[in-house]
Image (cartoon, rainbow, N blue to C red; front, side, top):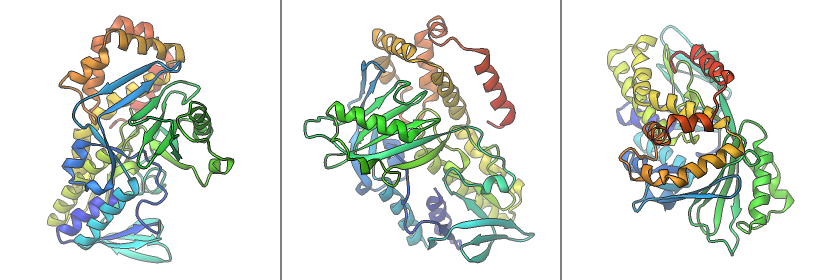
Length: 398
């Protein structure tokens, strides 16, 4: 999301330097690359980054029961994440931003009138800094913003679809033997290729290898040779489930995965990150006009993005934690409830259906299922209540 901020600020006439630790944009990314039509249109993303449009998906229960969701109009696009990042970087450079490739930022030190960025072997001074390093950087915590309290890990590998396979849509697999508390996926991309991936709290690589073996046995993908399982072939990444306690300070703000601006339900962060990047541009521009880069002057950034996303993140996180408590039998029961009441069709046809905004959809689904059925399905424990209370107290702004 740093490239979007860079483009926005450079377009307004400011001098912008981007320090990128990799040799090129989009390198070392673990991302399924699914973004909504709303995101594509709102940010005028180039169709050249698209592998294929998507209007349907299939969800598989642990036993293999299937729920298919489908709409006539395109809902999302499967994109090449490397091309997306390259597109954003190219736009920023055309606007006048200077990129320093292969330069890792080791430290950020605040002074009275500037910020000193220690990158590579050099030091540069700036009026303000945007931290958009992705999840896992220690910079926010070292600057006094705290740390993200809950996160998961993802693993993904490009695979080749079998010649007998007819997979044309994203497939989502649920079950505690597949991805405990979370999900796995197979996403067709282009020319008979697909992305197979898993997110979980532990051992995502091991669960990914197990998924690939299962998909191979089912004839969906071509079996992989042993070398394909090597760590160098699998991409890994951390995914925040909670936002950073604070995303601004004197002369700096934090954007994107670094700030935890990610959907807890799916782990998708592209659209939310871009929305918050625009909030960052607006706030920084105002700060430059006033010549004020204090924490108070940058506070509107946090207020803007939390007003936009706060309720979504809270609802999504609670739904995510509830799902983690389901065993396979309860997941099967949920599938049967949804199918017997055609709940997936009801929600698809409702005005609340959205690829990006899940809060209202989740609340509507709970209303349709009914409190009595949900209590039977998910017997909440005191442990869960204590964990949620702890998350609220340790991260009050969430």
